Amino acid sequence: MPALSFPTNPPLRLALTICTVSIASFAAFQAVTILASLVPLLRTGPSPVARKLIKTSKVKTKPLSKGLRRVYAGKKGDVKRIIEDDFEHAGKDNEEEEWEYKLEILTNTDRDGKTIIESGNINSEDVNQSCAPLVFLHGGMGSARCYDRWMDYFAKQGRRKVFSISLRAHGNSTRPPNFTHLTKASFADDLDTALTAITNLINPNANAKPSNRPVLIGHSAGGGLSQYYLSSTTVPTSSHTPQALILLAPFPPSGGAPTFRNWALFDPWFSFRFIWDGCDPMSPLSSPNLVKRAFFGDSKRLLRTSVKNSGKPEKEDDESVEEFFEQMNPEENGAWPASMMFSFADPAKVKSSVNGKVHLITASQDRLMSPNIMKRVKQAYDNVDGNEIGLDVVQGSGHHIMFDNQWKQGLKYVEDRLDSWGL
Image 1 (cartoon, rainbow, N blue to C red):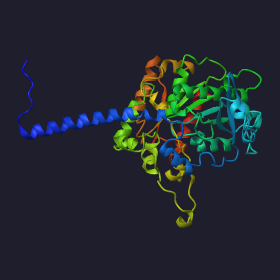
Image 2 (image 1 turned 30 degrees about the vertical axis):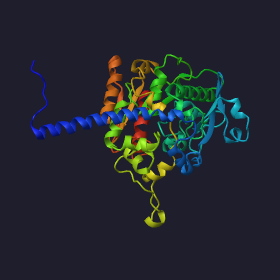
Image 3 (image 1 turned 60 degrees about the horizontal axis):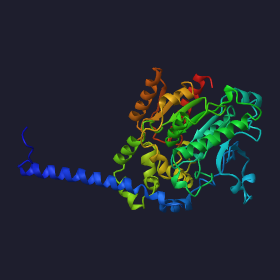
Image 4 (image 1 turned 180 degrees about the vertical axis):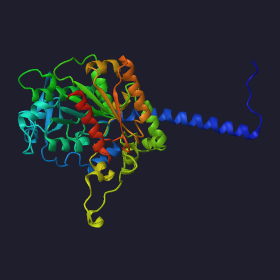
């Protein structure tokens, strides 16, 4: 075998040298970034960027739409139940010590688990018997407010019970001192608490009838968490186990590494900014411009428009990224996505737990969970037993299907799939 030798041609030598140095530098910088991502684990309080965002965040104070109310799911040992609305939650200084944590839940149900009827054209008895309840789970940097538009739609429609969850340290839920250490397993416990409490609310006297078991709908990292939860061997098949799963641009069960590769490609300053911002998990979404590029399609308006200057009121579909940015959760931990970076869920167990009722919805302009990644997710589920799962693509939408201008199309895909399942 001839010995390998470095080219003697000067231009070629220079090109190879530059290429080698560039690759080595990039690899070294990525290694530094990975090590730097451990820094947030040393914190207990909000990170540097989060402290700034908390000052302007409206996630805790934005009024609820008519027909919706806020309750909390509390966990205390083996007890997991609904704690009633704000008047019960507030004003009891010792109550936080009694409950391990409390999770914010937005819902269109009353204290008896019946749908709050805002339209006089709907029969309440028919409403509470006809459709499976829906449980919405947000992704990273999100909260229960991520589903405001869909929740408002269902509240006005009045035909289905809906619940939107905020995991710990998101929205108005409890922020534990060890928030930066919480992983997918920690948040799976949150999801189990919420599902148990919700099921007990709407079925107080007996185990849930098959028609009353919830349909779980998870977005992004929440979609990944949903898959992890359903594929976990510690999750029993019980009255609160979801009967179907709809995944909105979810983390692939094989791991989210391709997603972060995509992020680094469309945001080349991702790593530099992360380190500059003190290794802050909020760094990649620390401004409306960054949020638009990561979460929304090309048609989404960046800045709010003054109604006075425009001469006409803003359309609901035209809500700006700037307004969305103000209601994002101002803090996130890096351990959650990091714990789902590589294979974390078994499609066979997920599919089995919901009797094959799995559906995917993606977006044509999703730069994070790109359509190609979602096709591979579909293939992983199809390969389990040869039975194909559905895949819908919301044309023109970015990653945040529930708030982009095409949110009604995403919602229609959800309703169509529920109808096809008879739920």
